[in-house]
Length: 455
Figure 1 (cartoon, rainbow, N blue to C red):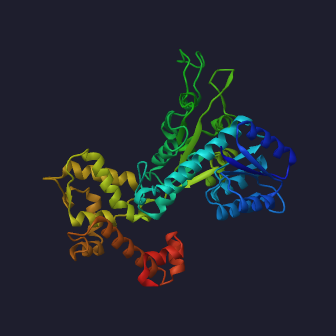
Figure 2 (cartoon, helix red, strand yellow):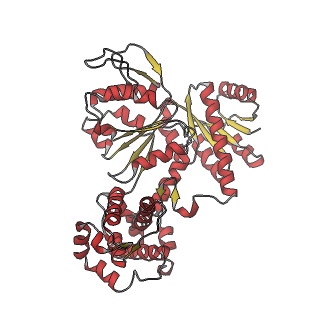
Figure 3 (cartoon, helix red, strand yellow):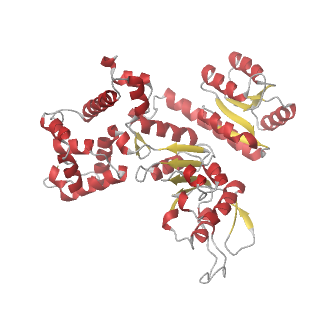
């Protein structure tokens, strides 16, 4: 049975947790503050640490950081009062598995402990089997060759097993729904429904009924009781895309549903519980909407406990060709892959992709529709890509001088393009690699690793 260390400076909490966990067969050690917990961690092996955040002389955050260094295989759950939820979220970013607000429900505590132990066990098996995100390329249906998307996948893997509400942000077409699907697929809810809904596509007069359902006679045309999406997604995940489109007068009801896990149908008087995880997405800056009064501040903070930001495609050019290959494989469905001309490779790699991944997928479908003899040529591309290419002499020169020549593997091509892009950014920054790394949103060490000869 798993061995659990509990650190809390409140003797009542220590005694209560000890009694609960012992009753379930866990082996338990108690520490009256963070300093005692650190000594125990140095001398003994534990599977899980449950720590309060507010402790002296060593607080929970410092204990978490020290645990990650001393015992990286130990899972960590933080205990927090409601007033310190924001600190608990920071703890998750530092590597904690989840947080439990005080006062807590015993069944929720035990469920979180079980999930944390299961997650740490599966993570250990992955590491021992050398199966850690294969070749940094695919995670679920997400193509992740770039560092930015690998970071997104790592974030998904860390937060998916938790019960936390997630906000996914990014420009239109970056793949927010794919990330939401991955969060669901890698969670304990994966066998239950995943229901996506585009809030912007629902008429304002119907959105409340769609989300919460209605009772017979609630309004003209309501001839029968209707189940809402919160009910239909019970036990699973509800993905609220373009959450910024929710009418202001409905936002308070949505907040109550998320906060209390209870809903009331339109025209109904009875409240009933719903077990559903909310994943929200927005292509607008919600903080700006909060400032101008069109989005509730309390709902914003409830939704964005954890935020996953997807970078636009123009900031991750190394993903372009792997994505193109992925979309071709989806369309060909096992048929022989078409040959892609060097000029097409150049155009795809140099285009700025204002429509992001969705635009790239549409371009690939266009090419496959108009290709002849199994060849994707410049003529099969949409006109706007060709015009952009012809207005960029540098891109044409690269193709004509053989940079995309035959015999070069896709990986070698991507390395060459990444190297070129990094050098261009460094030049733009006047040779200042520190500023270049900041502009690229990577560490200076990563920049030197990718350009070793530039040291």
